[in-house]
Image 1 (cartoon, rainbow over the protein chains, first blue to last red):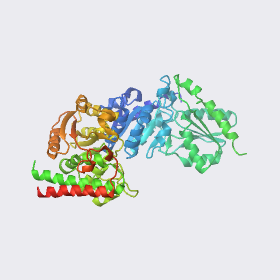
Image 2 (cartoon, helix red, strand yellow; image 1 turned 180 degrees about the vertical axis):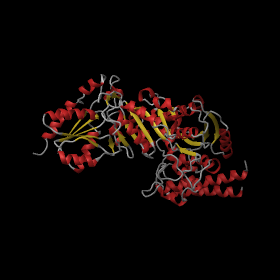
Image 3 (cartoon, rainbow over the protein chains, first blue to last red; image 1 turned 30 degrees about the horizontal axis):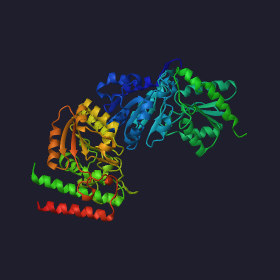
Length: 314
Length: 281
């Protein structure tokens, strides 16, 4: 667990590793050094196309390429991929269900010093509202690698949410298994369930340790695919533990917390508390300072976990 | 070019114009004005220029077409039906709840539609993607698109133009349906995209200017476009919105309005009269 790596690094490495298939084409909007698609570019320059600072055009060009049988990875910062180009993603990619993978890096507040204009905390909400879209939010670089591989094998639109900051590698590459739409129980426990995604998975594991010291056995579930969400696993956890806390580096509006609340409201209501960014914009700062300031730490998860458990019907 | 072929093309165009009226009449909605203005271009594309196979709409080596001004689906559907992609009779179901003929072109449901369009400015980008794919795969298929002149107000169009010139997509031909009108009035009064020709040239495209209702000129422009090396080609086709139906011609009000039964009958009568005239030529 000592190794640290950004999920965007995993993305670039995976594109290069699995990029031999001649159908794969990688597009970028002048950010290849940041999104790490330059790793692919170095290995397969003939299948890397720079579309310049024009994200809307890039997404529809990606759709055109996909209509001719290409597996297209279109990369930019999440802000512009999901934000600026939302309507192109909706109408040109999702509506015709074309085989475009959106590699959206620099998601969340851990973008850091660039500040609020570049910190997307709404992308999961808007991307998961789109029919035909698969939304994946990997926890570390290993999971990212397997997510890229699964995205290549899957025929249809995929949104891959990636981060800028180096984060601990929590999965073992040799034993890790990934299936789109399948959550995994990382730790067993029956007092409550912590459901996390992205870089908050590591914080959830840390929170479990803290809770354990107080005699609370928390189950930890990693939801890497926010859409389609693993309802079965979530409902089972709610039944067996009776209380849930969600954790994500995203607005509490519309993200993982909302997706879990929707599932449980429909199928098995239990108390749910959401750890995420309250309804506000980010700001400049170092990633760890921001996580602290915006309430995205293991301690915050522990607090919300206790609140959720206290709401259980006695 | 044989006189007989031109005559045949004029007949196809007249049939497609009747289909347009039929579609919007039965849908009680839709966009006749712009459909009628690009009918002659679509006719030349589907009945003279493009390699397509109605029996195998997804044929890998086919030429591609993207209707960037997607609201003119009645014209595209009329051409596809006449070409044999689906039954002409189905055109009456345009925009109906149980029909596959969506209000705007849907590649998932309509045989022969190569890209879903309707949101202006996006179709030309998709065409750029297809042309790039053709270059990557070293295929000789060509990609055609029709844009509206009002559509040039969308910034994405210029992003697409920049990309097409940068990547030297000489396998791409864009028609500009230059009828001068958009929903709210004249394009020059709503928000002028002029000088269009200068802008297109400045963006690195080869520009050919023609009368978009003259079949000889359309064919010659396409022949010239086919010889372009290293440059995408835009054919600025001066057209008349509502062309072929007297009371719709040059009227912005017919952009997105369906005719009444009576108006439709008058339109059919006018086109029928025109077709009879063709018979004796």
